[in-house]
Length: 247
Image 1 (cartoon, rainbow, N blue to C red):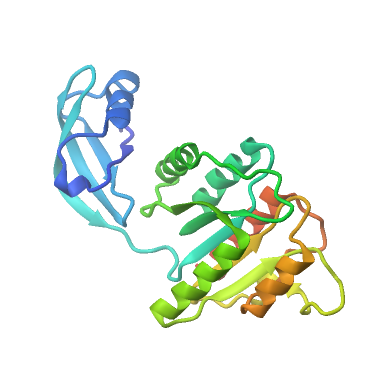
Image 2: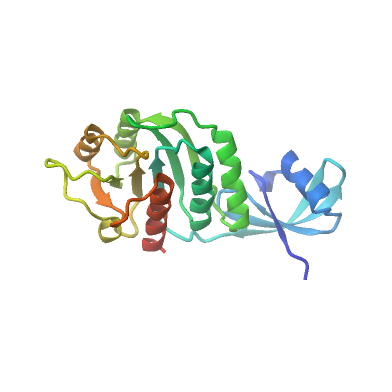
C-alpha cells in the first residue's frame, strides 16, 4: 500500500492548490501525479483527505474528499518560553523535538545573561512545520519573536487579565539563595488540565533579579531534576513533563 503523504496547507478547505514549497516537494521530489491521494493539514486541528487533480513542474492542485477533525492530544495550552542558545542548531533541534512531543506555543526570551539576542523565526517556523508533518500533529505551535524578559512578564499578566483566568507559571533555575521560593520538582507541582507556562533561562541561568521578579508575578520556582542540564535539554524535559502530565 502506497504511503499517504502529509502537506501543510493553511486554510486548506478554502484552497485548491498546494503552497509553492509544498508543491515543489510533491511534484519534483515525490513525483506525485493526478489521482494520487494525500493528506492536508491546516495547522488548526483538521486533516483533509485529498487527491491530486493536476500536477505540473511547479504546481499541484487538489480536490478535498473528506474533512477529518482531529481530537486534541492534550487539553490545556502548553507554553514554553526559553532563552535561545548561542549555537542556533541546538535551539532548532529543541524546536523540532518539542513539536514531535507536543506543545502549543514557544517564545524566545532575551534575558540578562542571554548569549543570543537575535533569532530568525522564519527558519525556526519551517522546522516546526516539518516536525508537525513528520509526527502527524494537527496543531501548529505558535512561534513568538524574541521578547525582552521584563516585557514578557508584563505580557503574561496582561493576557491573564484579559482572559479572566490564571495560568500555572513556573521558572526553572539553579539558584539556592535565601529569599527565593522553595524549589520543587516540576513533575510534582504541575497540575494536569490547566494552562501552563514554563520558562527556561540561558546557559548562564536567569539572574537573581529575574527570578525574584518572576516570583513576585506569580511564577513558582522549580527544578527539573538533580542533573545540571543544558538549556535545550532543560527545555525539552520541561515540554515532555507538561505533555505527559496532560495526556
